Length: 174
Image (cartoon, rainbow, N blue to C red; front, side, top):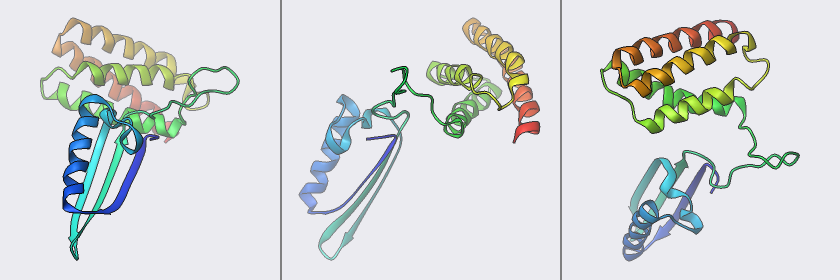
């Protein structure tokens, strides 16, 4: 499975129950075949309709990252995602950080780590706001330190600074 897959087929009632058991097992223990990488899902949509004695199943799976990461043919290292895809991924993690911190909650480490890793990768793309990268990186470092300290007020100030840096760059480049 890449970063999304769709299953669409007609089933008997007993096959539907088997599909759900296999899906539950794949989420819990890892899957294979059409359910490979399902345990790393970011979104699952399932539609089931009964049509003339048959069950029409449509399941869409979106994973947080590609199941088999792309590799750069020249360096052999993991390939960079397209800039647009990276920004879309960052939008999701950043939304969680801002909302939770503004609500007075500490965001999950997974969201913080993903956002900071994507931020570090983002500033390696030339031509998308290079003149803002140094200041943005400094603000990310402050956010990292604020998160490590556990001080929600410090995190709030740091995330507000990130919003400001994002707005400055996007005003010129979006």
